[in-house]
Length: 109
Figure 1 (cartoon, rainbow, N blue to C red):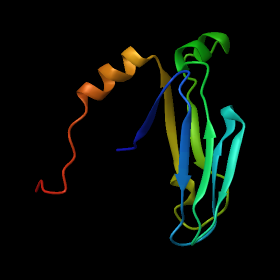
Figure 2 (tube, rainbow, N blue to C red; figure 1 turned 45 degrees about the vertical axis):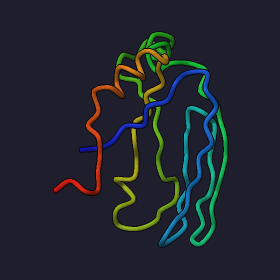
Figure 3 (tube, rainbow, N blue to C red; figure 1 turned 90 degrees about the vertical axis):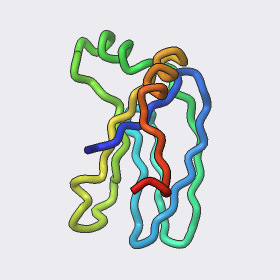
Figure 4 (tube, rainbow, N blue to C red; figure 1 turned 180 degrees about the vertical axis):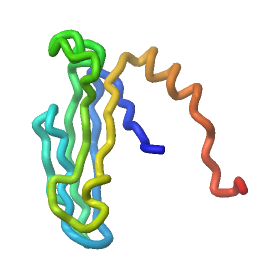
């Protein structure tokens, strides 16, 4: 399954990326944010989402709209699959989503 990144509207986030293999580019087109990810280095940047996904669907008159994160460098054979939907929502909706998530443990079989 493909993961989604859930963010709370109005909250600032710092992202830290690093690459183990080749150069990538963390690209958030709807937030006008992009940062190269260079092997052996940590790349950091911050941004604050200010419009929920639901509000963007209404304003764009597109019920299928999703914010996305993707790799913007041709980085190899799996490049086509390097994307993720981003859900920007209220704190209440985020808390409800989080409560539904399974707890991950490396100890589980």
